[in-house]
Length: 362
Image 1 (spheres, rainbow, N blue to C red):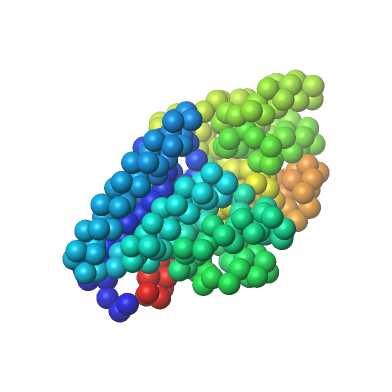
Image 2: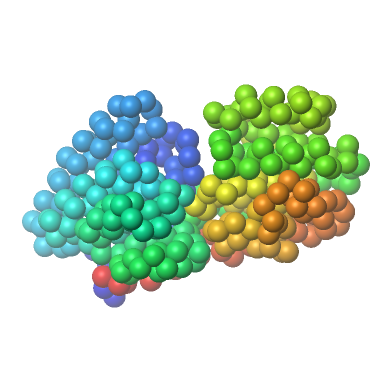
């Protein structure tokens, strides 16, 4: 396919109006990138985060909408490209398998764009990998978020063509990254921000343990909610860190922006992220990042340029990485570089180039 003229992309994914996860934040950027290279795009919501019915009713509606579009495409004698943004959980995979299979049967090209960290659990062989391989049967090409994921699929022997298409920043984050860098005034108190769902694997527990190893002038704000919250609150109390660690709950809008504006460092030592949209938002706001050098995170955060990635997954190593940012001038330099990095790597125009390579394969 040499030209986008007259081509249409049908995009399937989560309800983007309810931003309860990274995919919901990422999809608007992908839509902008598709349109930037000249494709007419129709978005079809295949599920929602609202209750059990959100897993099925939107999916049934999506089948009807997709079928209608595919029939129209046959009448107009063109092959649409169907891009399925899939989270990685078994139910998400099954939904997209059904929709992708329908598209394939009716003559469409099918791309499965993998987003969820659960994908890693399918790549160790056995029944899980057989299930994963079966879910890829209707697929012409696979898109993954970072080079690390491409390597994982290759190591697992997945035979489909694989393209790296990272998540682009939403346009409002991109505008923030384009703003002139303004460093906070030097202050004795160093404010750390963690923003995440409070779940196992996100590393907030390790960060709290690291706070006990840091000097008293380090303060932490934790923004988010989740099943691990009560356990984390109890741990803060047991370590007697109530004066230095605050739980802010789930934040959005101006309240969220205020936390970014007040922070000196962003820290999220996650080992359960397929990409990490939170890192992009932090860097767009000019914050240096501290995280673990785990899997795809090393592709998203430029170590020693935009912050520090700890190769050892311990609170002690994490505290040492945070202390490397204790100097105002270092934070200033890395915060400025963080803005440059996300514009270079994760702007809509940058990701549009990756998408073009993928779509030109058809």
